Length: 128
Length: 364
Image (cartoon, rainbow over the protein chains, first blue to last red):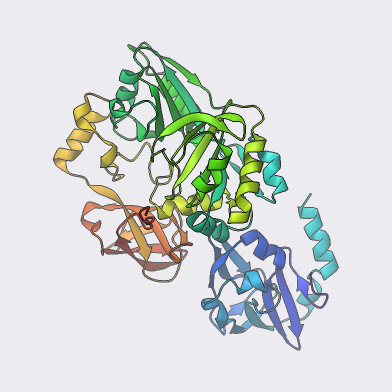
């Protein structure tokens, strides 16, 4: 369910590192909790992000939720598809539903994130 | 947390449970959008057992209901239902409610879950001078709502009540899945449908049989999430959002439940005064004219001046746009008027539009 080559946060973001860039999205658990997603507010390309800074907002029918930057860096791309089809996050949260690409500032921050196994254990803890 | 008699069945169906007014209730099962669309196109089943039921009996029952409410309960024949309100002397809302007429000496009042205790205290506190007995029967009652164009098709084989002969806002007693029930052609979705009340201590079989019977036809169990989007599209009031003890019945645009010729009732002098002087503000429907979804309590601006906050607001699954209700100064309430709603840090344009946002097609 949760790809082994991704890293995760306790806020339910995922990070896929490729070179000095990181693709960021929200996890399957998160999309399930949010329900039907209808609108995503994305950051401008070029924005500098501190870790844990809000990078955007996901709106489902019922709720509004912030998306947080898992690591510091600069936004180099946003998923433009989400403007028309925000429910890509529901349908394919770990793939086509990616949200932003960040140029990583400090690779050491990646090491502080959860592995797939740790994240799954964290989720099990939430369900009890 | 209180639980309804269907609680275990919701969990078995995968219902996502939340706390609502002290009750553990399902907010969604398969998702708000599919649930919403099932009710609009097929059928949906809701557990609404958290609603309150107050029984009023006695020689003066009619006169007493007339005193507490603005609508004309004398128009009700046994077997009829009326939408009305519990009014304060200021013509604001203690609650909105349904009145079921059993006879001139017996009425069943159905009130909101959030207000049961407050309402009962109000009702019991206003009996002076009336020969009536009032009883809070809320704990004894379970209630499910079967709503949608296929509601009658699904329910008819399971009841001895002739549903085709039951008009909107009428009710009858009978058996549903072998249990004694009261069934009314009412609901909170804007669709055709029924509300089924029972005091049977084991009503679970009603729920499971309706689910099993309706499933092949597209029926889904529906949570509180879709209940809210369905009622808002049809501009049905939600107490605490759209109406409260701070909003008058005329400001809420509910003049149709006010029947002045019926005689004196709580709040009437204020209603007459507002009619004579005109309203300063009114509840209107809006759509967003710019991206974003307006939610309850978001700040509202007319000509740059902060005037109020959003009463109800959501994404409409049927109309596929952001809609809502808001109190605006009377001069800004004409259809087409533009105003602004602050969504997080940005102000986005919204526009007054006619309501209800959704109206079902007339029966052929």
